[in-house]
Length: 403
Image (cartoon, rainbow, N blue to C red; front, side, top):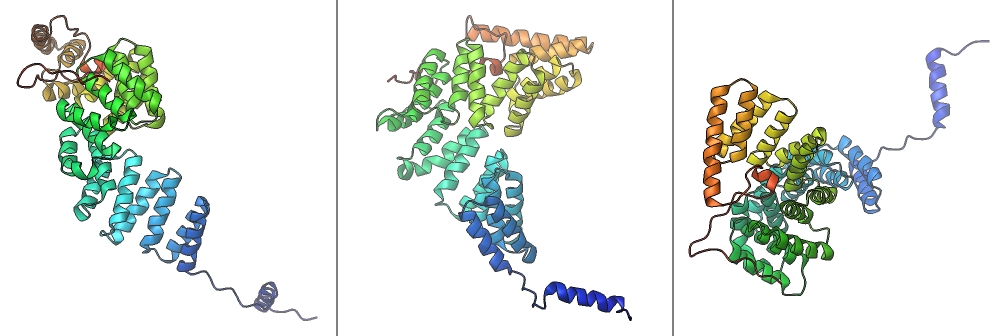
């Protein structure tokens, strides 16, 4: 009995497996993209991602597929993957303004605030009427501590956006932080026109914090919490008010509460890191201070906090570098000079330590002369206060009106 040659046998087997049928054509990129959209709309996000990726394997230059893939990743909280897709889409066509806005939004959600702001500026340059981009950029600037930029950005739009609670909140917050109490009060009044307003109480609380009236600030912020505990920055401000009232453990819980829903809040990370350092929870303190540093890399309070933490953990050279930067950037930061003197003494640098100690004593005397009875054993970061605001021309400031 003769045997078939190996190649003929293989061909016969393949023919039998195929059943004599014509192979089915592969799906086109359009078909795969449409399938992704259908799955996306149906809530099958993983299935949509699979279809979009298959479409891109066939046509890598499809901006629509990359944009939708980015949106699907955002839905899953995979912001790094979303950012990658949006950036690839913009490499293909930098003029895609909506893709750029979505990229900025993903960067914002991924805590890359400065980069988000840079893209939002480009979005607004091309589309000045994009209110969503305007308010998101203002929020970014507020988080970055750029209060003057927020005021400059939003003020020209006050007439058209005066009924927006978010607009009034962002502008009012920036004005109060700049100690422009009269303009800030006007926005608070606007928020209260329709009755009780959590945003209004929040801004009142912020105004009282500017005056270091921690008792009144606590009362206003508790009213805001009762009305809407989910307001961003609310529990961070409440934590500061509690710190100023000496209610330290409650402040810790308030900062933790803020970070449960707003993990990138700068002040909650900063102050919680400092408080945890005092509780000897060094690893967690580093986590929060490092996050605060990523949010505002140049903030002297963050550098001071890291310097204090380095010193507490025995990283003396690192503490020296951080605190030298602080005193160079903020020469009147008394407690930074105190800690830097300690660092120098630890390293047997007596002359440098004596110099810092003398500077600290001069600042202490100056502070006591300006604020009799003030406590200077803790730096501003620990007290939860900014540097004392200057009194405006014409006399002492009036406190915000209570309601």
